[in-house]
Each structure stands twice: as C-alpha cells, then as structure tokens.
Image 1 (cartoon, rainbow, N blue to C red):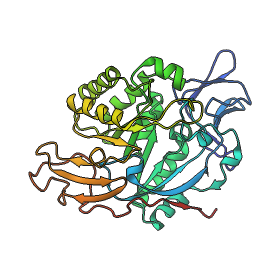
Image 2: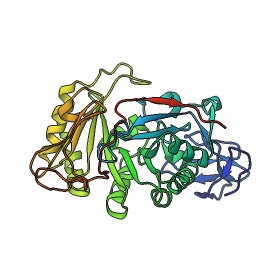
Image 3: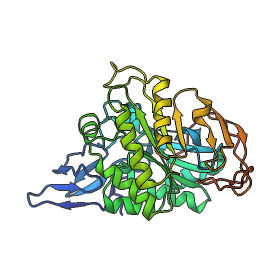
Amino acid sequence: MLATEQTIISTRYWHTLDDGRVQCDMCPRACKLKDGQRGLCFVRACEKGEIVLTSYGRSSGFCVDPIEKKPLNHFLPGTPVLSFGTAGCNLACKFCQNWDISKSRDQDTLADAASPEALADAAVRLGCKSIAFTYNDPVVFHEYAIDVAKACHQRGVKSVAVTAGYVCEEPRREFYQYMDAANIDLKAFTEKFYKYITGGHLQPVLDTLIYLKHETSVWFEITTLLIPGENDSDDEIDAMTQWISDNLGADVPLHFSAFHPDWKMLKHSNTPPATLSKARDIARNNGLNFVYTGNVHDIKGGSTYCSHCGELLIARDWYVLKQWRLDATGSCRQCGWQCPGVFEAEPGVWGAQRLPVRLAV
C-alpha cells in the first residue's frame, strides 16, 4: 500500500462497479461511491477510482486506561492499556456514547499524529501491556490498526480491538491475524434493533463471533448495552444468552452495561441496576459462567468466580482489584481449575487510573 499523502493511503478491499462507481468491501454496508465521495464512516473515500483511507496516522486522542474499562476481565487483569481511536464509524447507533468522535465530520478531531512505531514506543514507555483500538471502530481504520499491531508485537505489546464486529469476511480474516484480544459489542439480538437503531444488520456480527470462537485463538469478550424498552426484555436476553451458550460456549465472558441518555436517545431513561442483575441471572441460568455488570457499582457483578467450585477468584470494586485467588498458571487456588483467559503470574496494579497522554509528532 502506497501513501498518496501523509494521512491518505491506498486500500485493498474494494471493486469497481459496471456504472463506474467504486464499492467499498470493508464492511457489509458496501458503500458505492463516485469520485470525491466518502462512505458513511467518513474516513474511507473514493479518490481517482479507488477507495482510500484518509485518517492514517491520525488520532482523536490517547489515554492509558485499566484494561477492565474496555471491558476485558479475563485478559491481563489489572494492567494498563494504551487506548486510542481515530474518527468515524460504519454504524449509525442512535445511542452512541462516543458520538463526538465516531460521528465527527471535522478533520480537526484528528488533532494528534502518531506513526505505528511511535505508538508502540509510547506503549512501552508508559508501561502498557497492550494497546487498544477503541473510541471509534477499528474496522474503519483497518490498515492503520494492523500496522500499529505489527509494530507493537515487535516490542512485546499485545493488541486489543474494541469493535461492533460489523466487517466483511476477507478483511475480518486479515484483521484478526494481528489481534490478541477483542471486545465485541453485540448491541441487541433482533434484526429490528440493528436496522432501526444502528443502521446495520445482526447476522454479520454473529458471523464475527462465530469466526472468532471457531477459527482464531483471539481471546474475546462480549458487551451488550441494555437500553430500557429497546433491547432489555427477558425474552430477548434469554434468546441471546442461549445463542451464546450454544454457539460460543459457556466460558465466553459477557458484560451487561447500563445505558445513560446520549446523542439521539436523550429521552430514554437510565438502565436500572435491577435490569442488569436480572439479565445476569438469565445468562447464568442459560449456562454462561462469566457474566458481568458494568457502568454501575456492583462488586458481585464485577467479580470473577470459579465455575468449578464457586471460589471468588478476582474481586473487583469498579476497576480496582481487591482479591486475587489465581495461581501462577491462572488456576483456582482452591480447586486447581484453569480459569479461561490470558493471565500473568501476578495481577497488574494499575487500578482505576485514567491518564491522558500526548505523543510527540
């Protein structure tokens, strides 16, 4: 891939249509563009008969977060992760809680510049075990994310994708070759919700989940934001969690997060904590071993328990680890059962710190 400008690069996933337009093949949206037009994501555009990425090497900001904030509870617990995003998104979620970044149409959003090597060096310098592509969906800055992941791997830093999983088969296969972990945002379990609330479709996301489980070694967890009156019915949660159990297995961690009014859904109410607790109960009754609640203070719902003997393995108070009952192999100290995930001999001690950083250009 050749750079045409500092931030504009050629891409691979597109083809020319009979009418002269160019179709982007990165995600199921399949934007069909004339020269000079941008896709819905805003950052992928048609220039001189090809699809280019216009935001390579540019970021909307950098921050060191606890890995649990992604959220990932079974991937290097307690460690810091260097988080960054760009601009744009390939979905149009009416409830987007990062809408100022994901829906930005202003290049000034991309105020920070960083080469893949600079990001990898920064992660090492800041003591981060991993780097996360987050804030907006890495599907839209696919090429940049892969190059960053490659640079990070050369320095012993792992890569994490925080994504809605709305991507086509071929780019998905390439992307996850370079990811060590992912959190997939399963926004609901009905086509109606995806069509009218996100502007997308459900099946491609389910395809991504099945692909991750059965064709990769990527550690992944799932998050569902429960929105009152939209995707929080007992029947929908039951159907979703039964599907997860049947198709992905009992050990895939699932996070139910509380909604707060934002962007185009300001008239909806906050999610009651009781809704999250009930969803957790339904999921556990359907056989899921690791079900968490998020965006609320719930020590029980945020902690990890041994699915074999019930021992409290990792107690969490928000993002602070209060108890650690795993041995050096990641097994329960009481019964010896291996906890699924990616663990080091000792937990990290980053806690709840959030450290905004600026990278030198």
